[in-house]
Length: 462
Picture: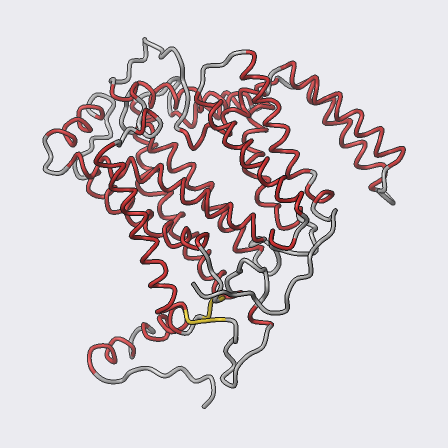
């Protein structure tokens, strides 16, 4: 019968298939999952993210075997792993390098989604799961950062947790609840260890599974943004513009894995600290609650958002207040809003302007830092472009994406530097550019002359 799922009924595989749908799952998600045949370099990073996740889980298990989540023993246990445990130094460096490479891969994976409109209909849920994975990774990295119990680990956790105290009314109590004490202490280390090793990995694995299931339900996007499921099909009902994921893209991804592992091994064996960006030099000093480092900064993958936090000063909130008031007046007088929105949006802007002056700037820094990530969830509804892929958008759209990327890298660099007036001003400009890119997307994304999208994907063998 058509559509009937057949399984092997002989041998070991048959025995398994009669009790667990192994062959059916392999067919649905590998050999009979048809992906667009024009995948390029940018499509390596999804499988590489899976690889790094596996590396982090395996190396984490081996590290936990010798790590002591105790404020008096944590730093010494890490030193013991590095110096006494056979191959312990390699496992530790694989884990620390893997953390940074995880974010390199995920940032590039998200950038590809931004380029090719992989968040657009029907992949909204795929994107939402992906951003949730990104949030989990940030939490996992933050909780794990405290575990070596070095100077930067200790003081970085102290600074970040103190940010929660800026939340009106509940902030101070919330910060104490997160720490489990009035300062970062043994109680903090224990609960961070529990979150890093058990709680967040379970959520992360569940989100990864949901991300893949949602992706395979709607099908993969491609550089042209053409839906192959809606295109022509052969007599067996298979997309003409698609090829089986296995063996074609498994071989394709193996090539990407080989290149990645060469870079990964080179960093581990020749530059595991990466000039202090992957492992800060202050973190090779035991945590000392009585001695504050001269410059406290998070690891590089947090620094763009840390720059936005530092940029939000009282002077900056005054500038934002002026913009909010001008925007409210302009929208009310000459805006294209109709009905209740003609009055509601200006009123909301005026309320925001009022709150900007009433509530401490530190709180708005936390809002800017958190909002810079949360706004990604709404990307499918912010982009109003008639086409998905950057290939068929106006040329000046590409310049906007380039400015966004350079700006993000600039914010990342500024977050690693000691604060000064010039860097602070650049951070403020960068924050406005980052948030403006997304908040103004409903306007600029529909402007310009768009190229016609082909009915079928464009593919050139290489």
